[in-house]
Length: 64
Image 1 (cartoon, rainbow, N blue to C red):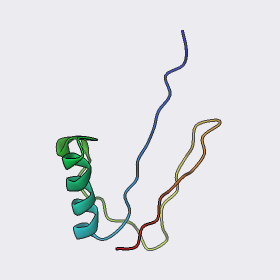
Image 2: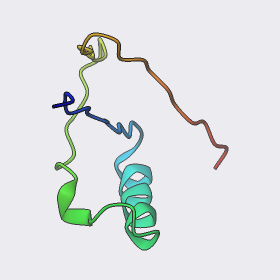
Image 3: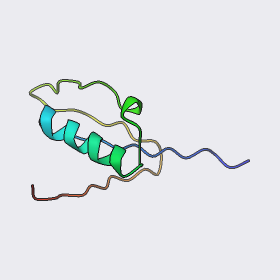
């Protein structure tokens, strides 16, 4: 049986911008609003993402 692969989406930005993107993804029928976590404050020294073996990081940058 193949190992289950995980995909993680991270939205990092202002509370208003991240909520707007959650709403946009909902309208596109990508994800329901309730599937997202609550907003979590980010410490001044940033965050650390612990990858699984073979994971890569990808992002999309858009001008707003």
